[in-house]
Image 1 (tube, rainbow over the protein chains, first blue to last red):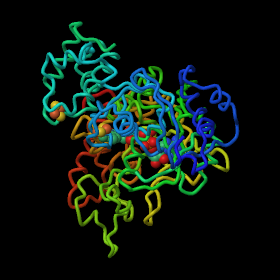
Image 2 (cartoon, each protein chain N blue to C red):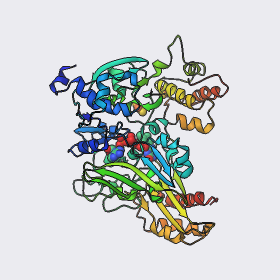
Image 3 (cartoon, rainbow over the protein chains, first blue to last red):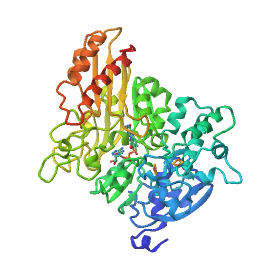
Image 4 (tube, rainbow over the protein chains, first blue to last red):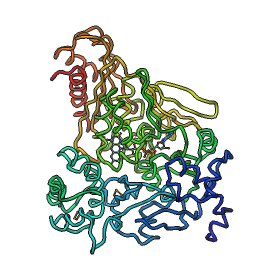
Length: 210
Length: 324
Ligand SMILES: Cc1cc2nc3c(=O)[nH]c(=O)nc-3n(C[C@H](O)[C@H](O)[C@H](O)COP(=O)(O)OP(=O)(O)OC[C@H]3O[C@@H](n4cnc5c(N)ncnc54)[C@H](O)[C@@H]3O)c2cc1C
Ligand code: FES
Ligand code: FES
């Protein structure tokens, strides 16, 4: 626990008392809950307020459990990039309007810039790094390379994650499903043609979201 | 963002208790609130996270009554086949929020209570955007997306895509606060602020939206949105209609405009005009004209009057299943 947290009178237990109840009903994988937290969920006392100083949280990032102390105001995007050195998700608009920060939370595509990291406590987050590595690329990553679906590459990590989410939901997406599924991502360099080729290739069974 | 505290209640009562304190604000999906905090347009002492509160999410359909919890995400609602079958126009309203990320994060309560997009408000000039000398920045400046039915000095528009439809079908908002539960028509959630600092919704400190309920049996509804971009933007104009009556004759019609006024704008006269009438190209056109009667566009948004007319005509056409 950090000094800041001590100063504001917080303990790990107090965070879990307030945070775990929420995480529980949010469908948290039971395995991630400490016993202490599970006990606290039944507690009917008014939950404690944590912060504004750092609060210790735990979340799963790309399959690895990470523990860190973050202020409640830190977004998932900034926490990933600045604290955990997971720099795949990019900070472009920081306002939920471009998609460069797209990650999967519990399998659902979200804007990491528009989520507080503390809200992801106890959940699993997958970034572009978690889909595959340069030596063992995910089908979608491979298809982006083959279809030359990037230029400056700034939007690419978000597009790759959004594409994987789209294909997981619709393995052979229709025109409409493609537009709705990738409508949350922008590319300033205009690589849409290549990205469309990636997704349309999926219809032929070449690419899968899984 | 400035520093703030964070609490995650497990029950509605706990949430109400926390929200009563000055400077506390409800956090749903965060897609709107975090932007406002980053831009320092709103300030909070503490966020009260609703994500873990039991009884706030979920969808129920029984005996024609559709109940939607405030923390239900837009995607969950879109994926609920029974709810969409009962009120198909919901799919049009939700698909308009054209980003899977926003649909996965954004909640029904957050959509209804999202703050106006008015760029004067978003730049910190307040909802009424009055200059130091008391004059309106909106009338003097760029007002292309603003209200054609301003109320007093309030010239922003209500941004919610769900609100016009829910108002058209006569949905009720279920609100919980320190004094217990109250129900009110969804349109009563909104108001046009009269002085700076007043909010555009009617929730008192400590109150939170629990959900919405609507009887969706025996009516036909439709939404028509006019959009500049199909994704990542709000409509320029929207119309929602709900019709009752059997056969060709309409018994009752409710017509509601979005993006036209500081609140979802109920076009009462237009609806009344259709009562007892058969929907024909002529009656529909008359209703569309009536819907914009009394509009007071400003220097840059006259075009929205015609958009409103068109949206009403096409929404009525959709509801009646005819090409107009
Ligand atoms: C690029 C972009 C395009 C968009 N396009 C559209 C569009 O076309 N149509 C549309 O309708 N929306 C659109 N949106 C808005 C989006 O739908 C909203 O941001 C979202 O629905 C808000 O939900 P949330 O759960 O994230 O709310 P939050 O950001 O968490 O909350 C919003 C506000 O509501 C309050 N609040 C939330 N839930 C409750 C509750 N249960 N009780 C009391 N207060 C509550 C919060 O305190 C806050 O003030 C768009 C957003 C973006 C970024
Ligand atoms: S950085 Fe998150 S959407 Fe643009
Ligand atoms: S490749 Fe440059 S923004 Fe998309």
